[in-house]
Length: 362
Ligand code: SAH
Ligand code: SF4
Image (tube, rainbow, N blue to C red; front, side, top):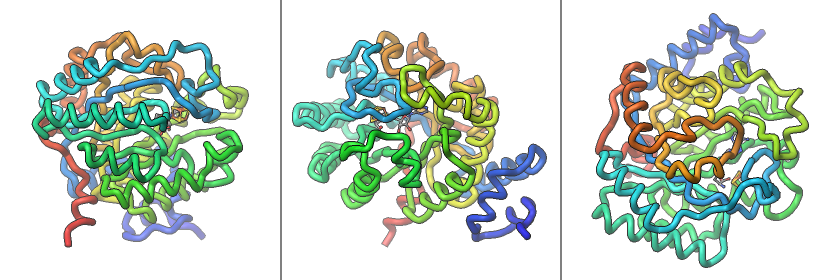
């Protein structure tokens, strides 16, 4: 017989069965999980939120993931790449506002022009900030050599979601070719770790064909990989994508949201000192989605610094929020919300993953 939620929460080690029970908890038991997530966060990483200014650098993408609005096969969006000056301007905004850290994210490209443009930008950002600004990259799968070049040019952290840790499910969500190979993606995570990055990964929650057993396996995957950071959020359908045909089989958005909150809380409980992001996709479903994620265990938030003129063209999914809010408004709106959530903002702090530090303390 499986244990009750309150008994599972008293444990230190969690079996897969425990994780499935937690993820399937009813409303009342959910509150116990959320409360535990909140307490573990306060004890192990403190009630503090770190800002990472998000720069959605370009929507050119050479891949065709079945879920994503900016996939190469979608001709509806005008493609853009931010000019260097605009990236540096956003970096300066982050610096002036004491964010201490930015994320550069874009569609996946690995041509040599792209690789050297990013390398140059990283060096310019180092120079502009005199090393004060930490940079996280989220630019997809690249060669070991590229990862090393970007690391040496000043990037410290890298986000590469495994998307789903079940290889069979991965196949259903991606074209069946060597550009979309599960083992390549997994290998990229190992390469990033080897290069010296703080490595973040994550999954989408509520995808077609995905089960609670898959999500429990995702949590075990994170634990086995000993990740430093996680970014997870609900899957949100986009009408210009192949997966849209399965929209009637999905959990209602509200349930996808609650399930995402449970994933955040349970991950905090099983990996106490990692950084966990309160993602934009959570806010897409619930206007207070990110604050709710902070309350149950998340400790990182990514205010959008992308110039408003590009935001309509970086729609990974539908109904993305804040499409018309410039960085300044975005920041003050977030400050109020975080205050309401009861956390402090770690202004001027890099907010490195405590887990990464612990792993590298020899
Ligand atoms: N091209 C890079 C980074 C940009 S995409 C990469 O793929 O790693 C960033 C993330 O957006 C992806 O990892 C995916 O998890 C998320 N995403 C894409 N489409 C989505 C959708 N329809 N709903 C929710 N998240 C989505
Ligand atoms: Fe490209 Fe990333 Fe979207 Fe896949 S998820 S299509 S790699 S931007």
